[in-house]
Image (cartoon, rainbow, N blue to C red; front, side, top):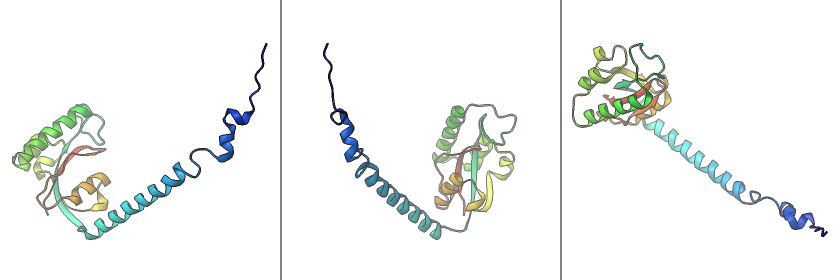
Length: 160
């Protein structure tokens, strides 16, 4: 019988004496880079908010699904079906079809047809963040991409 004796240092513990790979590299290098990138993004976000209007006017199309918050009882579609429907509505608007007509045929929001999808004037902080970010980034007359919130899929058109 042969026994092999291998010192622990030879097995790899010696690498711990000099430190794991993340000490002096990895996190020590990328951590500050990540923080700097986050700080730049936050500064850019603040600059953008300073130049944007305090209040805008917009209208939207809301396509809801079974998981949507405040879904009316007559809405029965999966999330994928709702996204597909929203995409078709967006294509119609982008093809030049009247936004109000598409609202009347596509929007699940109660009262949307009567208002033509109008949300009136609103400030950024009264809307869900992803909706507000999209709406406030639009120029007057511009239409957003599909925006997902807990209420469903929105297509936003800034009017003022």
